[in-house]
Amino acid sequence: MRDTENTPSAIVANLKNFSFITEENGEIVYNSGSGFGGSAVKLADLPGYDPMSSLMWRTIRSSRPTILTDENLLLTKPEYDTQLILESCMTMEKYSAYGDRFAADSTTYASYSIFEDLYKVPVSATVTVKGLRGADPNAASRPTTMSVIVKVDGRDFGGFENITSWTYTGSTLRDHTAWDALRGALSANGYGYTGSGTYVRSLTDSHGHELGEFDFGQNSGWLYTVGGVLPDLALAQYYLEDGDRMVFYYTGEYTREPGVREKMKEAAKEELAVPETGAEIVKKEEKTDALGSKIVTVTDVNGKQASSVQLSDEAVKKAEVSGKPIEIAVSAAKPEADAKKAAAVNVILPKGKEKAAVSIPVKEAETTTVLMKVNADGSFTPIVTSVVNEEGTGVVATVEDGSYIVVDNKVEFEDVKKDAWYEAGVNFAASRGLMVGVGEGKFAQETALTTAQTAAVIGRIKGEGTSESWEKAVEKFGKAEINNRQNTISMLYEAYKEIGGSEPAVDADAVITFRDSSDISAENLEAVRWAVAAGLINGVGDDLIDPLGELTRGQFGTMLERFIKLLAGIQ
Image (cartoon, rainbow, N blue to C red):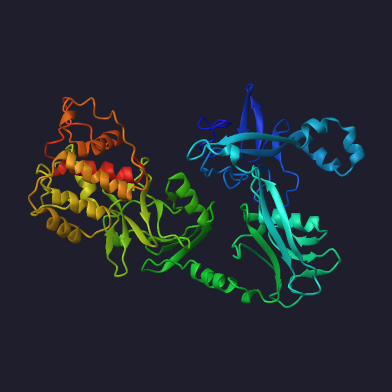
């Protein structure tokens, strides 16, 4: 392991790959890139690697790439602890050229016994990736093999003989692709092929009948489905599951096949439009990040930028499993006080996804740095649950399809003193529209919080408008009812359980150190324990928590900042 986070028995984060190993001052050093000397040991291409194929591995292969990817060793946490194998080949650099030269000459190669120990030596490591739910309680009873039914159907073209049904079987300790299954079926039945896991150009049946692309028109060729669905991936990139039914079939006109026309239309829709800034565009950049998300960024004559980002399925899946937001790969910009000057980022989610957690890069972020959605009429709506990450390098929020900007949305109040203990909380709540002033440019931070104000804020967190949430709260609670500390906490606790997305952690011993813990009512006890354990409240001093006391608007602003960070997984 090249970092302290991981051990062979507990992989919990991405691993670090390398290109070669050297010895420096008696210690082993792992390096990336090129420029190593003859005494270095380098990673060699694994047997079977083909640069013209769609294989995802070259020098490092994972037995479970859906969990730990080939080559880059990026982690997607499984449900339960999972054991997998990493394979590679190592070569002493000084013997590499000789080994390559003599590899085709078995007699000469055999005369150099040193090759056996120092040229393309297979190495492997068995590691355990820690799952989201720990050890699998049913591991002993789970099957050790998986099977897939494969059919090869020439559809009566060219006298090609079909493989009506063949069962591919593999170990559950490895991931298996559609290409693995097809090659297995072809080999077992005496069939041949041209092409690769990227694209199969032709098949030859056991009687010598070849059937290939363009044989029956310019749109003829081979396609495949799994479970009746036409995948978007090449054969070598599609991972099968136990019980899948795969059909590899020939078509004379692929554009007429079920699912193809729909995919062509979707592809046209997903073509990233060039974003607009309102001025002449002088520069355009296009790229695809490591997880397959596509980004188009333009710069206008005034230096203003705008980006469109088509998030990939892999990026969204990785974020959902890890609990971490998707890092949007655009340039970090300083938050603008004028929303019209801010760089827009148009986020497009994969088909079927309604929302995703993202982090949009930012520099010189403040408490008042907020993500805003650009509405169809050109107005802006703050994302009330947006929050700056711990590093101060990104604004994190759960978003839907739409255009977003990062702004400094500070609201000034004449009664909020600079550097006062409540200033940051008030600024946070007001900049997001969670709390508003009481009129005449004042916030009234020392005023007791009412139940209606608490309910209105929670309504805004759930997506209600400022006026709508207030009217609902007043109708239910009236304007004047003062909300004590424990009732406020209970209202936040119920909101967290409803929208937090995870079971709140409650520490039964969290309140026993407070001298007035007996004042906490039975119906509020669980909520107060949660709030103390989560760091939302820390007591009022002198070992007191004051559950029956009033909560001021300034105190609630501070509590809200912690609550929103908790929702975002930052606190």
